[in-house]
Image (cartoon, rainbow, N blue to C red; front, top):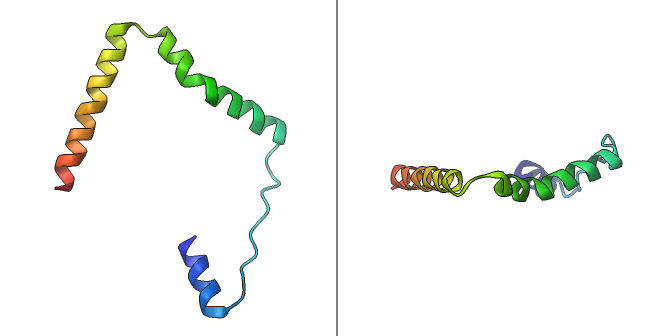
Length: 70
């Protein structure tokens, strides 16, 4: 994205964007539908203990990432 922007600025000519016509619109809609309800459905199937363990692991990972960037 940045490279194409630089080339456009340097040449003064816009680079044509490729059309994304290879995807089946029906398949895209089904994938989006599943993605929208996936997290909520998973959370409903987890026990409170499982959710707590997942949250602990996520917090621990965030702290490790934060420590490594300092």
